[in-house]
Picture 1 (cartoon, rainbow, N blue to C red):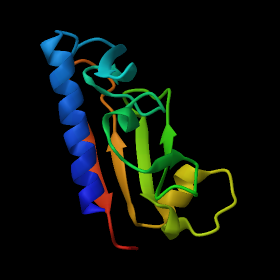
Picture 2: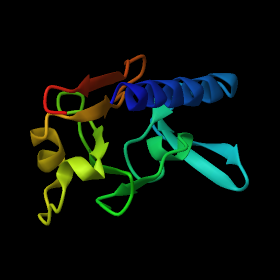
Picture 3: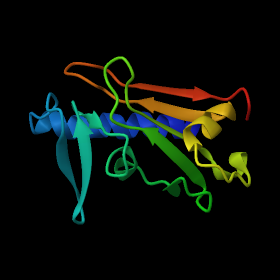
Amino acid sequence: MEGLKAAVADAASMAYSKAAVESKENEPLYSVELGGGEHGNLQYGYPTTDTSGLVQFMELNEGYHDLSKEWVWAAHNHGTVSTPDYWIATQSKVLGNYSGSDFNSAIESTKCYVKYTAAMEESAQIEVISETSGC
């Protein structure tokens, strides 16, 4: 989990650098080119938590609600400053044969995950934490 935490923090930093170079770090929604025709979405300079956001800035065998990948992730989107957007991931093997639909809660209940909380307003900071008590 600590390796994933570092990868998430590095991806967010890289994304912010790209936004700052283009003077877009205060934009509520902005897309940066990543090369090869790929783009990544940012909000207030940092990656969004959807499929066009954070995961576009990382090299990771991941899938949204996809247990066939090494890493499975879920997200809370359309949040507010008081209930911010977040991205949460764990290794698929930690969830085992999970067959429910609430991946956010399922991942969080493992106590073995990395959680990225997005910036929701100008000058806001992100947060990246790892929970490893259940790993």
